[in-house]
Length: 286
Image 1 (cartoon, one colour):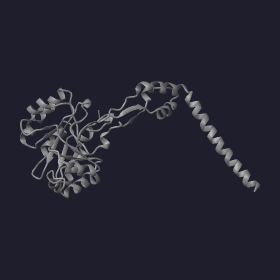
Image 2 (image 1 turned 180 degrees about the vertical axis):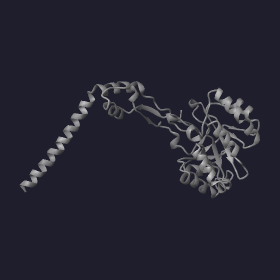
Image 3 (image 1 turned 90 degrees about the vertical axis):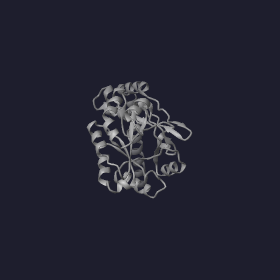
Image 4 (image 1 turned 135 degrees about the horizontal axis):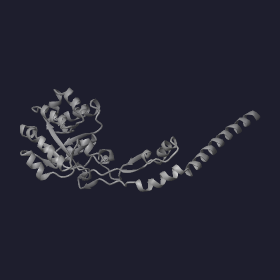
């Protein structure tokens, strides 16, 4: 019995010593010149988050907040034994009202602070996107292709290639009918086979069934800002704004005018990005 209590005393002593050592290290760290300077700088480097804008059944993405990761920054600088602003590490935190929590709203545009626009293409059985794809590669652009089930049945390899090239794939179910059983199959191909974390539905008319089905499957429902039927260059020049989600037809006129459209948008400091980048609230996508 005596040995048992001696053993317990030894364990308690070890635990106390470990606790005491940890507390000592923490106290010493707090008075370290490097830590003091990091904390001082952290006060001015913090950027508050910006809530997503919700109006009725619509949403516009917000912006993550950003602050200095004090602990990781300190650990990194301690290796060099000095404070160095270049070694500051930042971490993001999402806003209280975030698009990540609201699949039940129509996404009507991206955050205008990004000065980005997205090109959306609806791809059905009759469509050949080869030339659109070639133009995207030529100008180093990423688009969003909403593919329907009939097209996907015969273009499995092509859709994976589009993803590899940096394009976002949206779910167009069977010609936009999200109550069709093909919706789930297309979603599986995009998320499980294509490894795209998020997918997107598309509608040009508000439909509660579409919105509900897409929300349950954690798909954002895109309600485009600009729908082009003809005269793509003229229409975009007249209507484009920061955050515009632009639907373009797949035809010869778009293929012919796309280089001029790209040149015009770039001259106005717009970036053409896919939906994944455009709707992200992360600072990395700015």
